[in-house]
Image 1 (cartoon, rainbow, N blue to C red):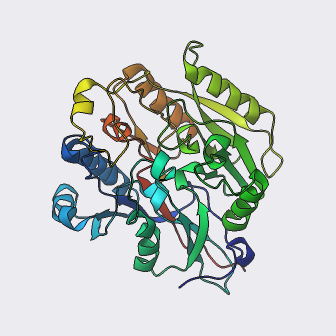
Image 2: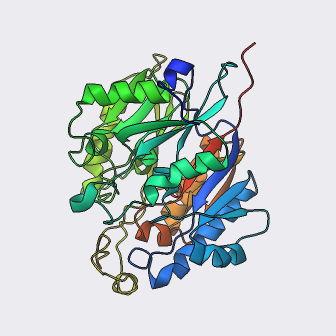
Image 3: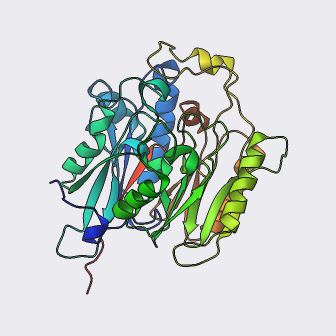
Length: 373
């Protein structure tokens, strides 16, 4: 069912990620021009992520027809595996943004189907054909029989993060990039976010993580809400690292603003690993056929511990093989989320080789809220 008007006009809002979920959606990687060695390593880690999340909430994994049997064999039986065509498996960005309302006169849960152009279009994006990805959100909403709000705005789920209380975090580097919506001004994009996410205030960080070129600086690699009034920020103390300037810049912006409720933000630093770089062996395993963005040896990886997933009672966080900062990230997240079990996924480097991490490959479906009294 297609909904008329905007979500906010019907009382919908995008809930914070820590609010209850009914399930999590994921795709299944396979394209050999993005995932090395025909995605065998990535599939193993995707299965580990799905299994970890399934301990806390139901998980549905979608796989292309040729991969359904393979996915089913690698995943535990409590995970639903369904057939769905896709160009790649970044469900944070191609799946729907699901919104909720306590308004009893409309369905309590609905989905926003954003427009998508492979993170920049034919000349600047990650692959040349994204026609199947354009249908992923619509298919998920159809499977769940949820109403759909179509949107012409080109936007990926990884470019926004909300606190559930009226505030949205994003980056100018991504949403104001000329390869997304060059016909819209900053104010016009803000108006769309407010009308569709049900937020009152947009916090703009200038830039995302250093070398997050695939997404043009998605917020979910740089900064996220941990609770209302509290953010986690990717950080480094190394002044020679180009990330330092970006982190300090973001810290300054966050320190000098308030959220939609008028609160000053508490900023918790989450140190980045490495720096980490793609090895010759890793790059050699990717088929460079011109259909997808090249994966070149020596490329700095956009690795960030901010790119974790909040499940119902669990924090699923990447580990990159950098013991000092891997351990530090688990420690910080355990302190920030004392009521959640922190589950560290070893081998998340395989996901970042493809251009993202755990948050990028997951999409939560919020639980049905109770009706307003």
